[in-house]
Image (cartoon, rainbow, N blue to C red; front, side, top):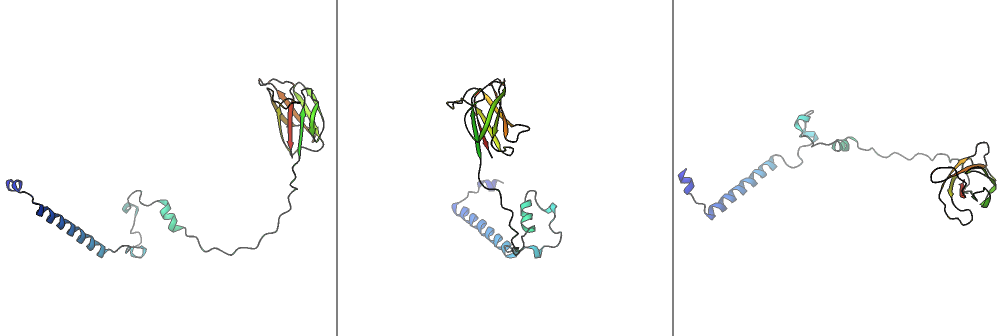
Length: 188
């Protein structure tokens, strides 16, 4: 032991040792690469059931790796004949009906409206010159003359028994029925 402790490393010895390690490392790599060249082990060299789940480290083979080889698309087939043309759709015209009513239920201005009236506190009926059963409705509380907003809310529903009519209810912000001027838009 004492002789090893007294031994001093010279620069030449360090260089020689490093060269020996490098040479042995390269020789070992060359030997392994000659015995098992790159891509030399494939499906043909593996026996059935040679690779088992016990021999594969967890997380190394993912479902995407298996799916890529398992599902190879086949060749694209020929395009079939075109099917028959469908029936023509309805004309592309959009009908816009609208009305601006005063709080009393009288019409301030409108398009496509035949009549309107107040049915009760905050309840109005607006009748158009065509059926509005398959249309969209929107109403907002607003001044009938100046088109300025006032506090309140409006809801629109179809009027039962009349395909040309809608029912508009106006309310205060506290949700109490109240007579309010409103703007109504119907799009068919």
